[in-house]
Image (tube, rainbow, N blue to C red; front, side):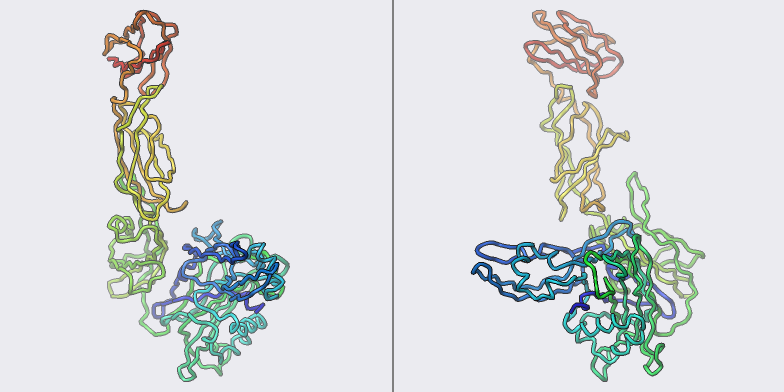
Length: 580
């Protein structure tokens, strides 16, 4: 069991084009999507003790686990631990990932790393010593694996890492279905090599990682699944930066002509987090961008139609908003191009196809028509189509759609009031709450300026800060799915009113003439002494007249709207002045 736990099992679906080498990204081979799993608790003397915490694994991938059914006594009380303990220590790796998505990080660990300290201390003396004393690497799988039955395969792999022949030969007559279930069809593709990027850190010296690829075929006469070829690379040594790796595939017939030439119908890829017996805690292997290359097994006429080049998702500006498009180039001008798209991992022929005459395609058009689900990864494939009915090779890109766009954005100004600075308070922006969105970003500013402001809120409403009267404002509301994905904005604009600049009647103040022509006179009842403050319409203080008494002349600096505020012992008064 010890050596068994040094593997990560991957099974992948591939397909291809006759006599044309194609690349097929492994489904979720860049680990963009993750699924949360619950932890496990035990009860003792009325207490609920966590055995292990909640954790996440890449979506669509299974984890290998160890069944635990143990009973032990502590201070006369019996605790039952009956669970399937996940043998995983997996996290996302986002720094310097080659394709800009997320890599998987598989880290070696002790059982105590995932079991709560209290439960571990109580149980360690009575649990299987193999579980409490050894270092475990992390294990993921796209198929189900029988841990105990997988032991012979693992022993063979690690004992024969210097020879592909000595590793494959004993497996050629074994029934792989005894310990691996879930190997997926290659659909006629003969693998030539598997590529990807890795970053490795060993907890000790000479602690390597490795990748093993097994091609399998079902033997109908013997009623079993057998190995017919494979390859390995066990030289994944310490690398602080992401480093490309490649695993070359060879058939058993190439290694020993006594074996029949057989094309595999399924592929199993094993990623070894540590290739040594003395694995050190803290070793980790990061893997990203897994891609299989190969040829189809059946012959076909040579295809001379040129392939597309530099396929990418690009950002364009359309009506002042950024939109997403597919762009590519071509060395020659074919008759047209064919595009096929579908959810990530879809099989060719099951997607939606589009015929194009330009080297661009607007993904935003699909999103605006509701043809793509929000916050979802899609695969887009493009190939050239020539006028002699030949086709170029497919090229592909991944793309995640925007978070869902908000709707029904509106401004509410029913409770607007003027503050002490003569600005308007009480404008509120509201919108409809979308699905699976818990945060929104509001961007706002005066229309026609670059002075935008941004705020993130946790509910579908936003109270605007104090605003200038009689001023047009623009607002954009975005939904946020995570730090890397936000929705298309919903735009609205509004002009603040003068209704909020109501005269404050605590003090009876008169201003004349109003509208004014450069000057006006301010009078207060009973010759009350006051401090006069003149503000611009945006709340900027222009001048102060202290100890004003009786009729006081105020000079206005320019044409426009101003606010005059008088403060006396009795209170304050505010008047709007229009200067012509």
